[in-house]
Length: 63
Image 1 (cartoon, rainbow, N blue to C red):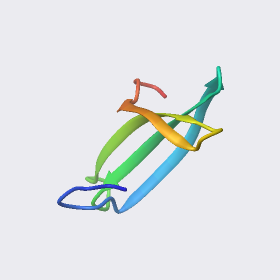
Image 2 (cartoon, rainbow, N blue to C red):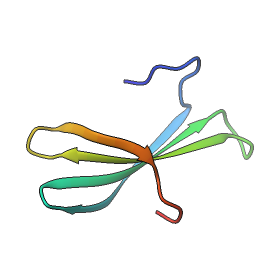
Image 3 (cartoon, one colour):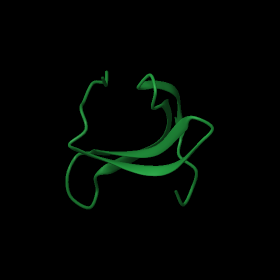
């Protein structure tokens, strides 16, 4: 669930890595449309067994 003044117009989720019982994904949120749309990239760590998110942070450059 996202809570903000605005909601993303588009989003993309990509598998990044997995190991030690964790799944790592990169989520890209687009705010607005066209070439000037803002982007937010997040690194999300989750547990496939419980389907719970355990951490959200800034995505590393190039991921």
